[in-house]
Length: 586
Image 1: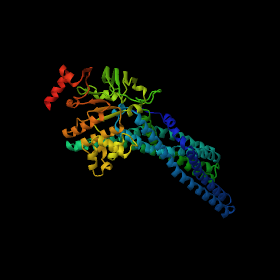
Image 2: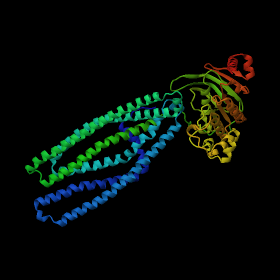
Image 3: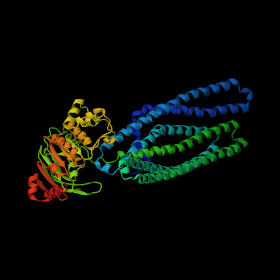
């Protein structure tokens, strides 16, 4: 998982383009914000006028004048209410819209990342980044321009009006403001670091919960509930300690703002009182001054308190960008073309490969040729690279050197989508999505008809047991197909590949986890599936590959042996040893 840190200016620069589709809403939102600000700024002027007129000549201040001023203020309040409703409704919807687009972009980018990224990243961390982290971005997207715009208007207008009322008193007040900002911003940086740690730990907590719940059968089988509780409590307690640290900085932050509030009020009371005694300011102006200072202090406090939400938003954007900036290792070349008319000739030419994360070399100068329509098997010791070799054909990983060709052309010349569309995979670890049987089979060819799905199920030997399920093809199979047996899940996965109908087939330990009866039924389905296709089979049960056209024995040194079952048995080499050893155990 990428954990690089970004500067605030860079985060804002990357985030601002998301406003492009909402510019009309932003402009209208800021206009409404200006209207609400006018209402607040007019009140001190009304109070100043009434107080000064009353002190100068109370008899001259008529009820009609007071009512007109009250009516003016009432009208402003109505405008303020309408504007505020717009900001609270449409403004938040705009924020939610930006959050939705960002989540869409993050999810789309995740689909492009290679297996290497997922091998090194916890799903709980990813989930936290595209859900919880982006919730805060909604509030940030709405309030950030609004808060700073309102604050800017209030600061400028208040400064101008206060300076006109009494320049020296205003100078005293505005000498305090920079000190207040400097003190609060230093605490702000610590808050940002604390929020980042908090977000990371939420991801760790999510990952722990997901790992434990998905493996709850194993937990119960080994009666390790207590151990899982202890591990969860450790992570939960760590999260609690991080939140304590966060709240400590928040408390210091709020205390600092309140202290400076008091200092500014004290300056107005003391200095304003002295100026009034010396005739440098009249009582009405001092009342208006105090109201404007209250507005100014409320604005500064609101901006500083918004800093908490600002930092949450910045943290959310940062963690979003850490996903978006994760390198796409495997991608289409500029001149990549659609793959069509596949025969199925596969060639490995001098191929070398090591995993990019741990640099563990798997192959070095590997050569291999598979004829179109040929059924080959790959056997060898665990860790020899059998599955890795098959994963290189659909470009789940890219080779370091050499070339893999399909029908004579480098597979990197084809678009990833079209290449993978022509390859079907049946693996030992079957993954079924939460949904119905039909949903999982039609996944092989989205948009296929019910009749096509049923025909694929029949070819896979799955139609009979599917019809015996409670709701047939509409039966909900649970998360990861927990309501089905291993053999049933495997046949559904085979039906999915039948529906896809690819010219190249990869069978990776497709029957090794099944009981004898299920293995026999699935094996029959695989024989049908492999007919007329270039087929690569990885198997530990060597009896299942006796009828392969050719068998490759793959070791850490490359292809050690090659030939049919009969030829390899006659050589009495590595394959012979494997086969006779397996025969002894059966």
